[in-house]
Each structure stands twice: as structure tokens, then as C-alpha cells.
Length: 316
Image 1 (cartoon, rainbow, N blue to C red):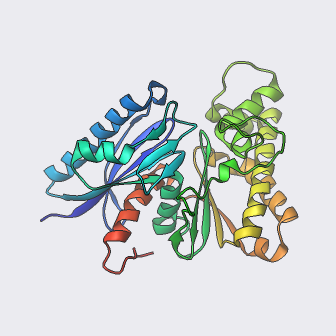
Image 2: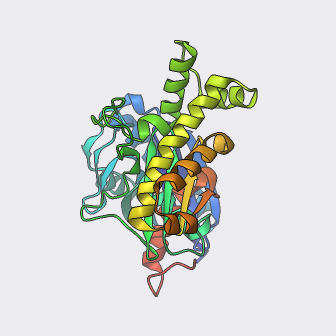
Image 3: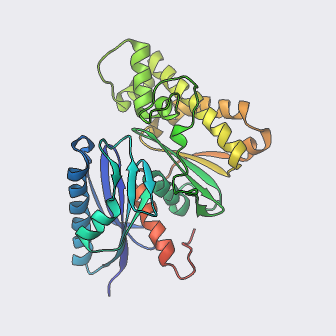
């Protein structure tokens, strides 16, 4: 029998990634395409099944063996039931039995996990969290995801729904979030939130991408830089609460906003140190994510590799 792999999937509001991942965390096969989430659950599930079948066939053709599949999906996820309970970034997804739908279609063992949890485990296993036992990951993209590793274990909470850091309230009475609350971190520190704030400051009505705002910030655009500073302040409020509550070794930031680190992180660190208790704030290390857009697929696969390991632990 050839080398064994676990297939990890990272389903985002914008992109879908599927990869075959070895026991050492190495990615052997990778497939990417647009999610086209606006089309609703059924077409997206069809694309997921097609992508999984394609990667699985590639592994088999190379003499490999697929041990199972782990799906990382955004939103409120019930890992126990295998259901996407709700997902603000996936229109129409409510109580979707994604795990069972995919398992029936591909004939392989399937697990379902929150995408940010999977990314957090990926950074812990093979990324910027390697070597530590307590860390928090925030992913700044279309929304703001979060994942917690405490005592070397992914922390899911009583109902498997822990880590929704993007929905911490940082501005009571602030902007309305897609979750229905007001003032959530996601509405200020996500790529979407930063773009919304840039349009407010600059008075433009047309859509401006995160990449364009980043470019303008580099060129000295005052409104672009202000948008990032304000996002950083909101992040710092969240960091301070996380530091005081969890006393983590590291807070790791990833996602599409990461290239603008130098524009938002100084404000975030300043706000955190101003508000958090001095000792845990001095101890915590703020670090950029190391795995890029492979964190989700790597961590998803790593969660199953941990279950398959004889001692129940992956090497870290």
C-alpha cells in the first residue's frame, strides 16, 4: 500500500480549497476554485463533492490511500451532528447536514469542523503556533473567524461552537453585523469592514477591494491608513479581553488582511497593552500566521491525523 493521506477542505465565503495532506502535514495535492456562495447550498455542495472526488482520484492514481475527509466550513457548526447550523457568509445555509451529504456522495469517512477551528489547529500543528500549548487564531477575511487551542487541545466549547471571536462586541450600539447583533468585531476588522469604513471616510460609493485599499495605504492615502488604524484599535479591544480571559502564549492573525499587518497591528498592540493586565500582556506574543491559505486544509486534515495516531496526538 502506498502513502496514506487525509483530504482536508476549507470552505470560505469566497474560495473553496481541497488538499491531500500527509501525516507530516505536507500537502501533496491541492485544488482551488471559487465558492460562488450566492448560488446557495446545493450548487456549492456539488462543487465540494466534485473537488473531493478529483483530489481523491489523484491520490489513488499516484498509488496513495485516502484515510478520510475533514470538512472545514464557516459559521455556527455542530461537529457532533455534522451540520452547518447557520453561516452569515454562506447565503441560505441553515441546518444543512453537510457531513452526511458529502459522506453519502464520496463513500469515505467524513468529519465536519468550523473552518477557523481547523485553521487554528493547522497553525498549532505546523505553523506559527508550533511549540506552544495555548494560542488563539483570528482570521481576518470576508468575516472574522477565531479558533482556540488550550492545553494542546482544540477548544470547541459545550456545543462545539466556541471561538466566535468575530462576534465579540467591541462597539456597543455600533454597526449592524450580518449575525444580527451590533458592534461585532467582524464589522470593523474584516476586509469587508475595512472597505466599508474606507468608503465612509473617502466618500466614494463604488466597491473598493481590500487589495486596492492596501495599495493606497502604501501610497500614503490617509483614509486607507485611518481605516486600518481603526480596525487595529478594534482588534486591540478583542486582544485585551482574550489576554485577560485566557492568558494565551500567542495570538496569531491570518487571513486576507494579513499583508496589511504593518498598518493595523501597531494600533492593535497599543490598545491591547493599554487595556489588558500587564503581566499576561507582556507575555503574549502577537504573530502573523505562517501557513497562509493552506492553514484550513492542513488543520482540517491534522484533526483526523490526531485521531488516527496511536497515542491520540500529532507531533507538534
